Image (cartoon, rainbow, N blue to C red; front, side, top):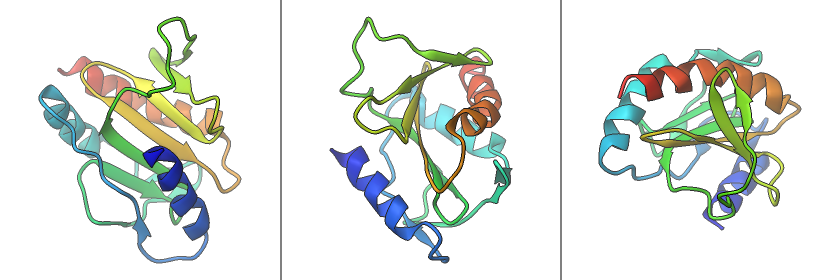
Length: 142
């Protein structure tokens, strides 16, 4: 339910300019260091959208294009994900596409799950392809 609220806020604020409100996750254990590493690997632009600011400021959140793309690192395992679900693999990173929220994708990595919301006319496949490199490097450096 929290992810749905985040998605609604992102879509409502997309294109409005300024700081975007995104609830930061609270990673635990090894995910803290992994998410800190990912923050240093993320691109300044993504699918043609420049990096923006989120409120409250958090090393576990990144936004691009006035919030049309948002990343949260250290989220819980998706509640809707079943052990038998197929993941979309892009550059060695498995992505879970939430069947109830078509703009929500979660990278299933060890030690941290990384949630990405893609809206505002961006192509999810392009966004996930650009993020798979940094997410894969984060997972490999644990």
